[in-house]
Image (cartoon, rainbow, N blue to C red; front, top):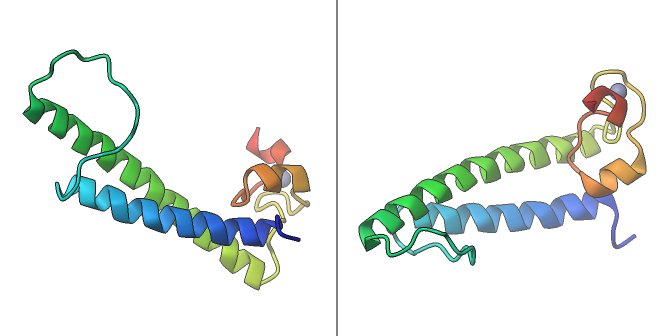
Length: 112
Ligand SMILES: [Zn+2]
């Protein structure tokens, strides 16, 4: 049961909220990004690197916020008992798909 989709959604939600917090600080210039990804740009003036980092963080922040919306939507589907049902065809979403994408809204056929 430790790995049920609901628990994964809750864990993912926690991670996403933490990520939004961190990215928000990067965008606001409070902290610098710790992406760990090396850029190929050599010897960028620091100002440019920071602007780049902030732009990157802004894009990631947007994605994290979208993910949070999707996770919250999935959690509310859990509550009204429609979780795991395809939004388009009404059929069940395969558990394997939910294991990979706990916030999936459609079955694999409709997603294709
Ligand atoms: Zn479907």
